Amino acid sequence: MAKETRASRRGRRSAGPAGEAMIYKRKWPAAVFLVPAFLFMIIFLYYPFFRNIVDSFFNIRILGGPTGKFIGFENYLKIVPGLETTDPNMMTALGNTLLLMLCTIVFQVGIALLLALMVDSIRRGAQVFRTLFFFPIVVSATALGLMFNLLLMSRGPINQIIERLGGEAIIFKEEYTFLTMAIPVIWQYVGFYFVILVTGLNNISEDIKEAAAIDGAIGLKRIWYIPLPLLRNVLITCLTLSITGALKVFDMPWVMFPPNFSEAYLTGTYMYYQTFNVGNVGGVFYGGADYPFHQTGLSLGRCYTFGMLAAKHAMGQL
Image 1: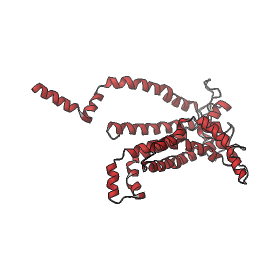
Image 2: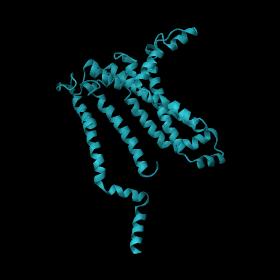
Image 3: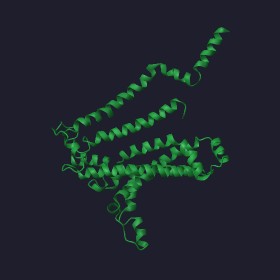
Image 4: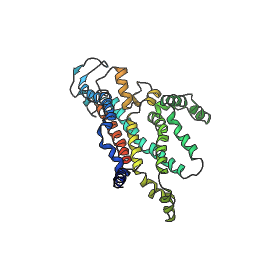
């Protein structure tokens, strides 16, 4: 009887969150899974990161070739505005990237939140809207870029409609360069954040909504005091992902605009152009001043987002 009592006590101690945490006392199973992943990150993330910091002080013209002439901080001076050495194309790329980042925060997450609140309020057909809004994510960004090229060309469908209505054809890429680039990028990922936000709204208890309705919280007042505060962590995750996503936009603008179209440069496209079209491996962006900062922002954003989600999962809050 005493033996059963001790066994039952051990069972009770191992049950629940505290008991689940006991599995982490064995270090070697965790090491078996963590060491290969850590080695992968060292080889493909940290080594290139620090290698590019070193290469930024040299003039390298051949990708994978020998280290060129030591030029000190010359590459870094190209990102300081107002100097003779400042690269205007680089400043354009930085400005476009920062503006695109702001647009993704306001419009991608903002429109996704608005759509999620609207879909959450309907009883029938919600799954249809989820599928429709998420569909652009499934399509390749390259294919979407080609599609928008066809829509916005000088004799494309949009200009034909404008001419039939009595207007003049618009050269979108020259007259509205940033909008032509930003709208497809923003449109593609609205559905991604929509699904995340809808999932967060579905996790809100119906009891809370009913209690708020009884207390007189309706309309905008209900949205302000119930979903938005409870979605705070989900919104932070979406904002972090949208910022890091804006930093790595490449494929759609690269397909839509020619390589030497400087007004449409982003940090990713200009980095690629300098490396593979100009042959400036160690200068300006790639291996220069931007790459370490670029990768640091992406790494910190991802670490914060997924670290926060992992911590909440371990604490039983997800």
